[in-house]
Amino acid sequence: MKSMKTWLVSAVAATALLGLAGCAGMSQQDKGTAIGAGAGAVGGAVLTGGSAIGTVGGAVVGGVIGHEVSKDDKK
Image (cartoon, one colour):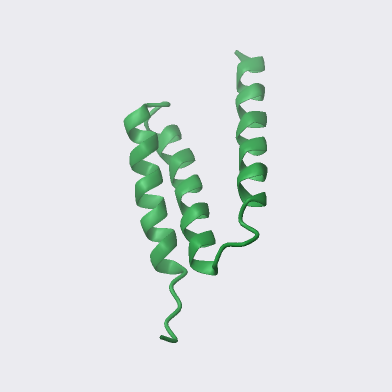
């Protein structure tokens, strides 16, 4: 069980690094949305014990929050 947990943490870290590397050409709001969706997916998976619906729901909620928080109010 311990090796499975270690593998899962490593996989999540690698995915986060690769995902953030793709943010080079994105606007600040797009980056906020992507980071919020990633964090929400992890949070949803943890809170629901790995449920697919919880993971997707967390990603949606996190993406919306990240999008709204990073909005440029100078428009």
